[in-house]
Image (cartoon, rainbow, N blue to C red):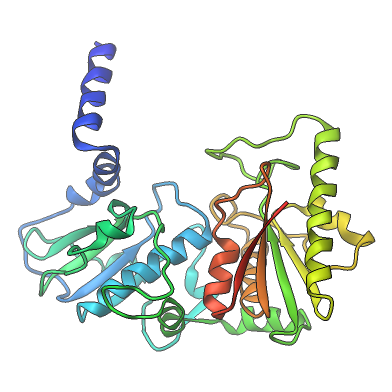
Length: 327
């Protein structure tokens, strides 16, 4: 019987596509809430962080939110964000030009008026053509997303990514105070980011990419290799201070013997797995300090996580140059 069920499930995935099944899985609990009623907010788009599913890192969430805001604005829709887990987004970022803060209780589930928008569907730029138009007088909910899209300018609207971000967000007073406490003037340094994931330490509890190095010799070799990359960047930017960011406390601790600088990094964490306030605040401080740099580098090596969007998102927020340095 179990083999039969697996075979049926496999046929559905092959026939309908993985993304279709994934979207159905994420939307299904909310489909069950739909009722024959008309009590809904017209022309409103709600981006919702579902507390019951696994979510990607902060950068992917931010990319998906900006993508959805672009579509909402293009269609003249009000835009709302429900983001309460594993932290409340409004505790770190405040509304700027758009009052986006919403609660789960603000969401309406109407067979007549509620529609689901699947940002996960669109993995290639061509797939967006003709699919950004929303029906009038509906309340759209986005539970399913991937955050794959981050153009400098959205082709269907002409809106700039960095300007859309600035319309939505500004640092909370607490976050701004933490940024100011770092003591760096804006555009006075070059930012460099390295994403080790589990290469040096057990950083993430679960990852789809197993890059853990097995021996101490391998770890030391990787650290030295990356330090050589930092020295190259320093040589190219001799007039600037080099500020290094990473998800590896061990790597940041190892940099005392080269002419680069680091921020306090006792609370390095990942927002997908750690709701700790100190770790979350540290993540936002790093993101905004990257955005305030003169330019941003991401060091890439076979052992590193080359798909990290954290540094790219920081550069996009700041509207500054982004460079990949392969070592």
